Each structure stands twice: as C-alpha cells, then as structure tokens.
Amino acid sequence: MFGGGDVYDKKIAVFQRVNYFNLTHNDNNMNDLINIKVIQKDFDGEKKRFVNARELYRWLGVGRDFSTWIKDRIDKYDFTENLDYFVAFPQFGDGLNLQKNGKIINPKTGQILPKEYVLSVDMAKELAMVENSIIGKKVRKYFIRVENDFKKVMQVAALDPKIVNQLTSQFLETRRETKNYRKDFTDCVKNFVAVKNYGTYTDMLYDFLFMERAKEYRKLLDLARKDMTRNYMYEEILLIIGAFEAGLAGEIEKEFKKLGKMLTKGEFEKIFNDFASQKNWLVYQKRARGIMATYDEELRNIKHPKLIDYKKEFSQADIQKLLGGN
Image (cartoon, rainbow, N blue to C red; front, side):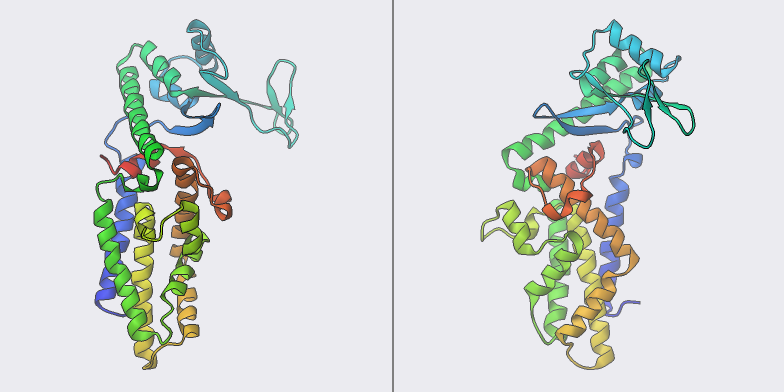
C-alpha cells in the first residue's frame, strides 16, 4: 500500500476522478439511443465528418441486403463519388486479387471481400430521412446534434486553439484540484528529497507520459513565458498527471520513513521508475499519448514528432469529452 495517509487518500480520489471521467464520457454511456460513430478527416483541404455506411445501414434496420440498398440509394438520389461518399477497398498485398468484375478475392479462403462505403454526414442525414421511419428520423436528429457539436469545438479551435482544451465546464475545477496534487508532490520533494530539482522531476513525468519535456511542449504550443503549461493541457491528461504525482508523493514519503533520511536524487529516480513501471501506468501512458497526438493535430494543427504512431481517429466521443456534456 502507499504511505503518507492524506496523500494516499488523495491518490485514490484522483484515480476515481480519472475513471469517472472515462465512464461518463464513454459513447456507451451516452443517454442517446443512437450511437453511430462519426469520424473527422481532412478531405480536399477541409475538416469533414464521415460515417461508415454499414453501421448506418444496421441502425436503420433496412430490410434488404446492404450492397443492393447502398447502390440503389446512390443511383436514385444522384450521390456523387468522391464528393458525397467514397469507396474504401481492403489493402492489396497478402495475395488479394482484384477480379475483372471489380470483386476482391482472398485466394486463401476464396472469400469475396466487401467494399466499404464512407459517407459524408450530409449524405448520411439524407439517407436516414428518405427511409421515412421513426428510427430514420432519430438517426437524422442524432447526426444534426453531432455535427453541431463538432462545429462548436472547431469554431473555438479556429479562433483560439490554445484554449480549446478549456471548453468543458469542469476544466477550472479539475485545474484547481490537480494544483493541490501538484503541491503535495512538490512538498514531498521539499521535505523528503535532498536535491530539489523540481523541473527535472517534472520533465521525468512528462517524458514518461508523452515523451516530451516541458520546454518541448511549450515550444510546440508557442506559449509565452507567463503562460502556465498545465493551463493548456486537456482535462483527462491533467487528471492522469495528478494521479501520478499524488501516488508518487506517497511512495516518496513511505521510502523516507523507511530509510529515516532525506532521499538522494538516485533514490528518487529509482522510486519514480519502479512506480512508473506498474501496468496501470502503461495504460494511462498510452491514453495520454493518444490524446496529445490526436487532439493537438486535429484542433491546434500541431504535430508531436515523437507521438505520430499514437494518433487515432477523432470521433464524436472525443468531441463529447471536450465539451463535457455541455
């Protein structure tokens, strides 16, 4: 168990906040009946939103096979390929063969691999409407709400991308709360560690979580000297950092009591590395890197060179987290 009494209790509290954040902002916990994934992509130099046609088809409960339905709708309503929709094929290689009839065959299984139709949100709304059903109307309203949410976030991102992380109404509360955890950590360093390299220890944490030191992060965001670094971090990342600092503070205090002396820098680093190697932190590390890579590229047009492999799809689930249910 972690030592430190109050520090341990605070670590538990902030872990609960991280888990509550993930649960309450999860797609599957949204109050809406409809939950169709909407992805934002760069398309012809613009940020546009898209939907997988098969997922839309399943939600609409169409009473005929997918291929017939989508082809009929495209022909009947004059949708244009590469404007209203585009067709995604499986990656060639691994022996996949393109037949003269346009079908793609896996020679190992003889299976015909399906085409995937990716629809603009506008096309998806129209397809939902022309089904002329109750579920179709609900799906259309869902797309309208999701599109409005995307636009709300993207407008802020266009006007002042640095503060797009502050859209959720809980941001200020989270920032105040995690400042307290930061103080617990720095107090532990002050009281129990001989070498007071606060900046170095902070860089160790940032480097562990998202492979950047504070100076590198500030440079990418072009922060002024007066700007506080964590004011521009996304809420979930603040909670992860707070949980780490609170937990690490408990470990430092416990080791101080065990040894009965101020810890050396080397002893601090060993505690840090042992604490960071716990499996749960590798999960939060991956999450923090994904948020940093994805949100900053989509909303701030900033690429983190060391995090390229962590970028993921940017969907309505991310928009809901940024808005905090507003």
